[in-house]
Length: 113
Length: 110
Image 1 (cartoon, rainbow over the protein chains, first blue to last red):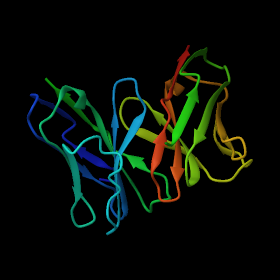
Image 2: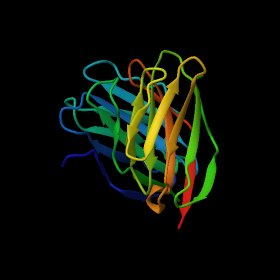
Image 3: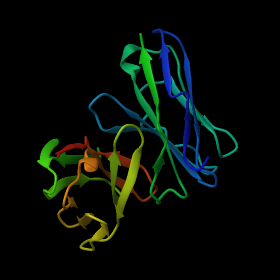
């Protein structure tokens, strides 16, 4: 597709389980970002990948959160031992280069029971 | 810590009104100010501003940046019900990291 693709669109899981969220960026975009949006809040930066450079993980809220980007394309955000406060919409964005406008996917709505 | 503050947090107007949304920022290594519109799901890109005093325009929407006062505004003229959305402002660094404000919820009544 032409846009950023995220899956699943919705995920409901029990507290304590691990979850994996996937992001397929726009083809050719070198930069990829993950954000979290809680109810009524703005977007909170989580992690940023630029080409082959080491990712900027400064926004990850705890060591239960990790992300990887394979082959410079698809990215997976993993949350281990989920907690109820992890419930949010997780948005992925990509840009051609780091200083260009970011284009967002529709997000994954994560609900922790 | 980088910070972006938007005002007002919510705004209710009638079709045809003009609205001004405000955004102030404190971002280390600031390079750009971006505006996004968020309806149901993905935020959609509106404007990216890097130079002070130069207005960007797209149809009924326009935006300007003041790098001295660390401030940007988004204007929407002749509002329509389809303009109802959350408008997000973000400050961007030279390497692309964005810090978002909390958003302005705009509701346009017929």
